[in-house]
Image (cartoon, rainbow, N blue to C red):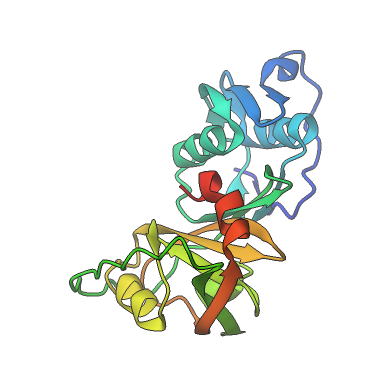
Length: 224
C-alpha cells in the first residue's frame, strides 16, 4: 500500500475519464462526488479545481473512498476528512475563502480528568475591543508547534467557548481527553484560522490581549 506525505503539492495521478466529475467549486460552494476514487486522485482534483492545498502527516493515498456531498467548502471537506478518519487538522482562509487543509498528528498525551468547565461572562458590546489570549511562545515539538501556531496569534475560541483569561484555556484544555478533537480559533494578521487538534496539553505560553471588535464581528460566521 503506497503512503505519501502531502506538503502542498500533490503529484498528479494517472489520467482517468472519471476524474473530471469528482469535484466542482463555485466560490464558497463545493460539490464532491468521489465515486470510489483513490484518495490521491481526490486530493489532486480538489487542489486543481478548487485551489485548496493539503499538507501534513502521511495518508494512505491508494485507498478508495466514496463520498457525495454539496455545500460550503468547509462542511464538505470536514465530512470528507471524517470519512478518512482524520480528526486533527487546521483550516486556513484567505479573504474568507478556505485555501488550505493541514492534517495534524495525533497527540500521545494521556487523557486528563474532566473538571467542571467554567462559563465565560458575556462581553459588553459597548467595548471597542474584545478580549483574547495572545501567544507569546510555542514549545518545540508540541501540538501547537505541529499545528503551526505562531507567536502573536490571538486565541478567541477553544472548543466553541470564548476564552479571555489564561485560566479559562488551561481549565478547558485539561477537561478534554487526548483522543478528543477540539477546535481552536485564532486571528493571525487580521484573518481567522481554525485549527483542529486534541485535548490536553497544547504547548503554548499566553497572556491576555485585545482585538478590534470590528475584526471579531467580521468573521463571526466563520467562528460559529
